[in-house]
Amino acid sequence: MRKVGIISRCDRDEIFSLVEKIIDHLKSRVDVLIDPKTAQRLHLEGTQMADMKKKGAEFIISIGGDGTVLRGIQKMDDPLPVLGINMGTIGFLVDVAPEDSLCVIDKVLSGFEVEERSRLSILVNDEIIPCATNEVVILTANPAKMLSYRIFVDMIPLEELRADGAVFATPTGSTAYAMSAGGPIVDPRVDGTVIVPLAPFKLSSRPWVVPARSEIKVELTVPKKEAVLVIDGQYSRKIKEEDTIIITRADIPARFVRTREDGFYEKVRSKLA
Image 1 (cartoon, rainbow, N blue to C red):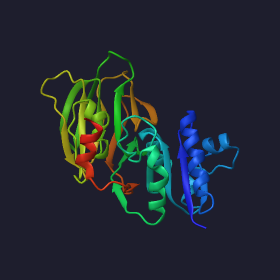
Image 2 (tube, helix red, strand yellow; image 1 turned 90 degrees about the horizontal axis):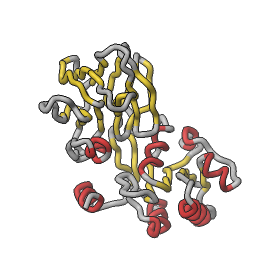
Image 3 (cartoon, rainbow, N blue to C red; image 1 turned 90 degrees about the vertical axis):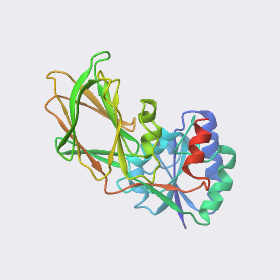
Image 4 (cartoon, rainbow, N blue to C red; image 1 turned 60 degrees about the vertical axis):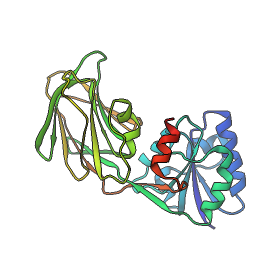
């Protein structure tokens, strides 16, 4: 029997009700693999996200908001295509309205196209940490205290500045934190990485878009000032002056089930109207 994975935020009754409805709708046609937290509430056996592909899942149904999607992708080394049901707010990664979910799932089971989106690979002192689908953010660990840092692109100095931090975003993430910090909206077909300083002290510090194949290196330059590195709002760790951060394009992309025919520009207009 075919297999489909389900992940959910599952902390609101309306989300849980939709999860139950979708599982009931699917159970006679496919085997459903459910993430452990959702399964626990259903009193069923759960499957870790990292194991869903090994167990034969064709795609993942994510019920929640963008955070649920990002959390799920981050837990998969080789991400399965994700179909996002929007139970959040704006939701750039979750295209399907709850009332349309069963109809869309039925169509997807009949066949679907996969849309690939580039991710960012991050090394901190040669340690591999989770890839970013939206963005890598470096923030001051002490509110109201600026960071001083250098940014290099392919070993060439790009910026040396004082700021609250910086956002390094994929085109997918250009409509998230990077946009709210004043960065450009980038078509996902553009092969680039967005760099946006956060509240820079210099008026001349502006956002950049650099080739996605570039190696971006970040160094903190003031001793004893700690910063926090955050990936997609899901993973965080502290970094210090002696740490070196290297950001490159990941070898394996994120994957999404294509459900819209009207394209990226219409999505931006409808979501940000």
